[in-house]
Image (cartoon, rainbow, N blue to C red; front, side, top):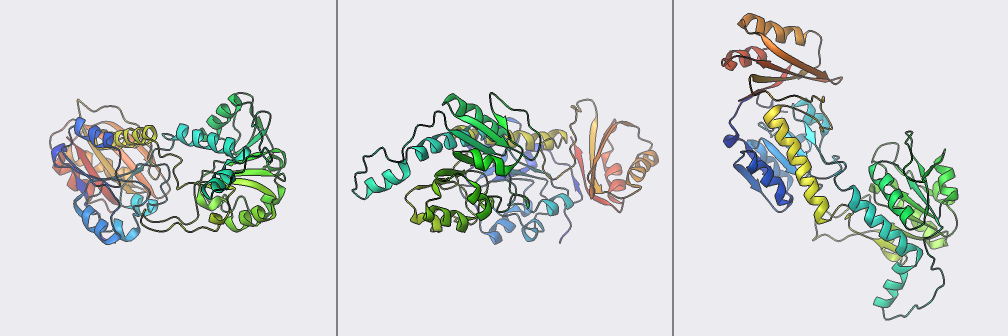
Length: 413
């Protein structure tokens, strides 16, 4: 892997920003309003080879879920200083490689909370009324005017797996429709409204008429809902997954739908999804009229995309202007004050013994006092920020770059 540029100290008008995949226009506006004039916006993701070529001279890159920043692509990004994932997940980025190149990655974990909760709320009503199957039949010319299998949601029990920002807001909205709300989370979470925590996933599955999943994609959640878990669900209950595609075993769900043990499902995320709108969506679930299939649109509303654009762009600009890494998912978190009366130098390094001592020795040798110093580390990478009162940053940067553990240095105008 090629080494990234070891020093970076450019005026704003020389900093290149590339935003891919039709990111909401408010992101570009944020950059323009902050003084960044070299901002390019493209409507789609780029093929891997073209992406690697385009980001050679880019300092800040914005992507959504279809761009893949692999180790091989990042190896070509010699000037890349920050990455913004204008979405919730960051699994499309090799986070470890980015960190080792001194590149923080930002996302917007909460900006689409309301949009996802609203979609799930609508889905649970439609599932309880049997709308998916009735809609599919009507498209075929059939007229299923019957109350069989159709129920009000009032008085029914909703089980929420994962009681974070989305799960908890869904619970509040569901109570407004008269649902009883249970939730299960591996971390202790205080309930909102009248929601009731349960002690185990099995208990939740046994008590709920509707089960909605709101968990991250981790090793712990891989096939979280498999054959054994589905068998624990109430006969005639419904399953909703608007979290991550690998959380539900699709073969196990298909088996339960075929047997009638599960009355219906709504699935927004899938283990394998089309790379573009031109590719066919392939899933075993397509055969079932009683399943709502949506193309990963839980957060695809105007409001959510605008909120995401503002959130991520703001974090990237703050890092560029100030050095703060608040909101970075792969980097030591440093929340910094303004530096209007001082020059700010940032040093990203491998977390090895003696680095801070070597940094301070560079300043001591140059006879320059450090007005303030901020340090945070992860097991493999450290990030130290220093405010100094000097105009001779060049000497300091050269000295810092000579420290063997140095990954990258930055000097802010």
